[in-house]
Length: 139
Image 1 (cartoon, rainbow, N blue to C red):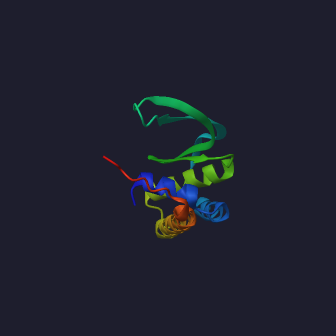
Image 2 (image 1 turned 135 degrees about the vertical axis):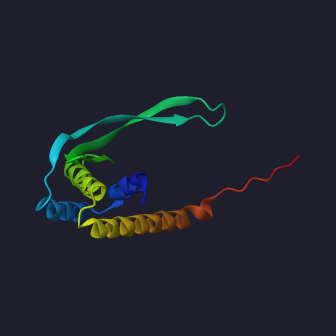
């Protein structure tokens, strides 16, 4: 799993499972907290579809944390006010980067979280699909 996909999966993973796994990893894994966890705002930029102009749409609350384990860096930024989850995600990211013995269990949790998130989105789309408007192109 690529790092970007891993960080996405961490945001979708259940908070309690992520924190519990990070607690297990920390029992035998020395880390140094280098940033956070902090809660802040991040500007969300979007592109206007007609002319392709980029504009600042809104601010989003995010939680961010960064840790190091030797030469390995762990990082997480998650939407919402979830500093504990952000710290847990950063610890697990560092563990994966360092090849920790819990890496297979971490990856299993993340694959499961991605699958569950995909299923939730699929169900949402099925719910709204009947409301989709079809336009005819008359030329």
